[in-house]
Length: 432
Image 1 (tube, rainbow, N blue to C red):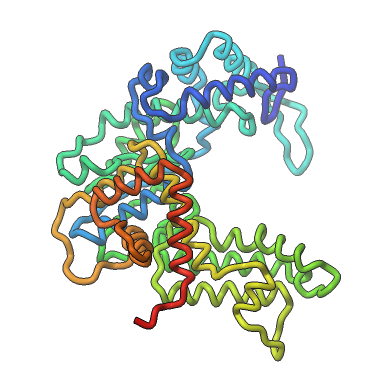
Image 2 (tube, helix red, strand yellow):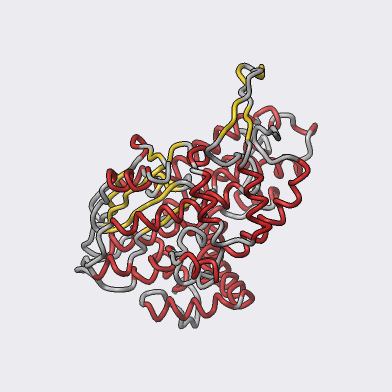
């Protein structure tokens, strides 16, 4: 009987890696792959990633701020998801979508699993046999869990009310990332019904972590709702990122104050990898006003001065500081990431939740608010385009979106467009 705590035995790891590669190719996009045809289910689970998950929420928010509608999100979180999988149900599902040799390897992975417990560094002498769950840390387990969860969600969809409103028909009603699932609509779903259905698959819903979020123009509660590590409120997320990056910066204080003992180039590498990466996490989703961008630029420069150990009364101009650090204003970095993320999503399958939310934004479903539009992601993207001289591009209609989607298919053209937008943003304001 093979014993393993977190992974598969060494002699079969190469076989499992091969199986994983084959499964990932068959289970990921395009949506019309043979795997999805066999299973007869949607592809939301396997065509999603971190960036498209969070971007979808910001386009839904923009829709709610543009029209007199309220979009409700029921966020479901699983408890110990990998550890609760019913292996027999999983094997019955897997049997329909993999070859016999791959199925044999998966059976070997899941069978006769013996677990040792370790308490305070000491391993107990009484191992026990585990007959549920998949080994955490194994390269195949995330794929197996995704397949298992998708099959469970297929049954959940049968108990959910069918969309009747035009808006509900255009919105992506479900989005999943890892073991987190969001149900989107004009009403919250019945968490008890969802819990009872998932319980058939031995999946446990963490009731304490279940979130009910309402996206609207007037509401403010949604701003502190976290999705994939990002708060939906831009201002709140920026402030949180500032605090987290400052904490990381302070931990390396001894590195910054050592002067010539550590090369400047080394310091800047450490700053970009350990501090700046925290500050700009998912910054491509931010929709900031001009004043908010200036505040963020000032915060960034303050951090750069600490990295170079420049203190009063020593003074340095902003341009000299950027040149010395080989950096640019953070607002330019955010703009680049915004268009890189936008192009990435436009090139992806039209059926993924983020693209569905984009299409829904440009379809009129409610009464539009009068006056100047609020600062949202599509508004900021359109503002970026408006800076271009002799420009015919804009982002105000579905036709404009489709035109940009066509451009995005050619990566070289998209890079050229992004470069033009960046240069226009860097150019000094005109006197006209």
